[in-house]
Amino acid sequence: MSAVPKYGFCAEDVIKEGRTTKSNIEAVKKWLSYNTHIPPMSDEQIVLFLLACDNDVEFTQRTIENFFKQKAASPELFANRDIDLKENQYQHTITYFTIFPKRTKENCVVTCGSLRNTTYYKWSIEPQIKTAFTLIDTSLYSNPPNGLIFILDLKGVGLMHLSRLKLGPLKKFFAYLQEALPVKLKQVHIMNASYIFEKLLAITKPFMKQELYDLIVSHPPDTKMEEFFENYIPASCMPVDFGGELPSLEQMSEDFQNQCRKLKTFLQTGEKQVELYKKDN
Image 1 (cartoon, one colour):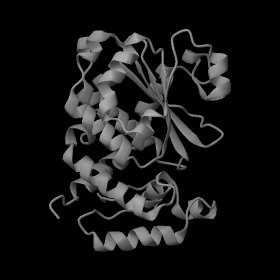
Image 2 (cartoon, helix red, strand yellow):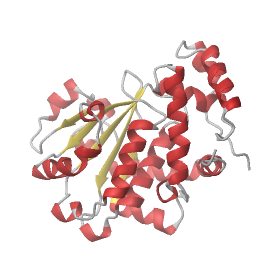
Image 3 (cartoon, rainbow, N blue to C red):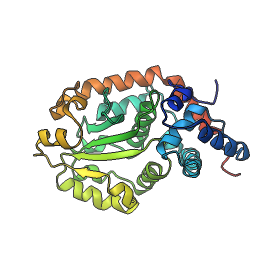
Image 4 (cartoon, helix red, strand yellow):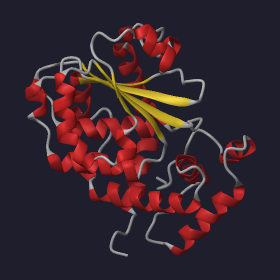
């Protein structure tokens, strides 16, 4: 098996669209040739990082370095992502993880996490983070988005769920989100944000840079969704669970799992690529 993930889009097409340039890709490839501790990368993978970093080549290089460094250091969050492993299937009985099938007019992909089973002691942070990161990687497989919008639904989350949080995994989660993500994070919407959100924010804010904090928008349980659709994400890009026009979170969660099965080789290849990172160099 190759150790370079094969994406469902072509770098040349992204160049033709004017979203990046051949010279930017070549500049990153030249840098990679001098930094042999970083595994080989395809032009398509480089394109994702360039788009995430607004085509700033130096910023792209730092992000690529952080991407491999952080993934290699945290296999509990990034390895063994086979959807049919028992422990991975279990996570989908606890939480709905979804990629919405329709993007915004700005070509942003929308993803969502929402509790399916509210029993607090069945929820664990590390496998939930791993599934969330798998969700992101899968959403980038084809037609590179201009950005990522993440929706976190706090319906059913209680104080005992917060007691299950661990600072170590949280620190790694936010480090990757802010320093290594191969897509530009555009918005984070917190749905059904009650007093639990304030408690959650108190725990997580120390790990956030101001730039991430500024992307967070909270919406209380009595939010008028007509205003949400008008100001943030249109109803055509939201599931029926929130009053939108897309299928239910349950259906889209099943679709995501099926997508992971179809992309099993893609995900496994990404893991093999990370294993080639030589962190001691």
